[in-house]
Length: 160
Image (tube, rainbow, N blue to C red; front, side, top):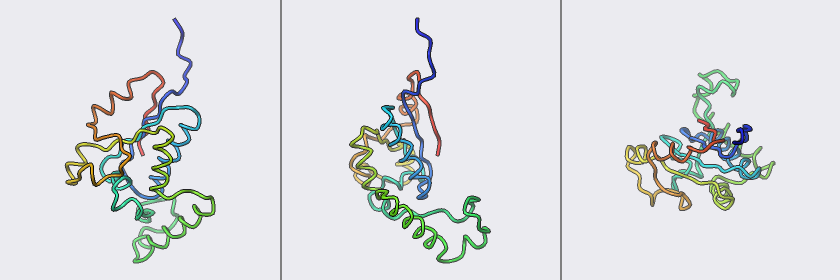
C-alpha cells in the first residue's frame, strides 16, 4: 500500500464575495492550479454569485470599507466616489499586467478545465436562474453535492 505523499490533486475554492480583489484571487488560484496540472473547481455562493451573473460580472468593485489592506480610514473609504476611484486604479494596474477581464478570465478557466458551480441555496435566495449566469457554469449544486466532489485524497478546500 502506497503512503500518501501530500500531493495536491484538487483545489476546491468557495467564493462568497464578489469584490474585485476576491474574485481575482479565486480566479488566479484556480487558473494557477490548472497550469500546475491540479484539478480546480469554484463554488460561487452568496454574493460570490455576482462574479458569474451575466449582468454584474463586468461591473465588480474593490471593497474600500472594512478592508484593512486599503490602508485608508473606514470613514474615507465610505466617501462618495472612493470605491469607484479604487476600482479604477486597480483595473489600470491589472491592465498593465495584461490581466483579462472577468468574462474573459471565466472563458480561460473554462477552457483550461476549471469547473464552475453555482450554489443552489444562494440562487434561490436571490431569485436567480441558470440563464442569468455565465454560460460556462457546470450547473447548480447544493453544498452537499459540492462537498462530495471534494472527496478525493489530495483535495484542498479554500474559502475566499
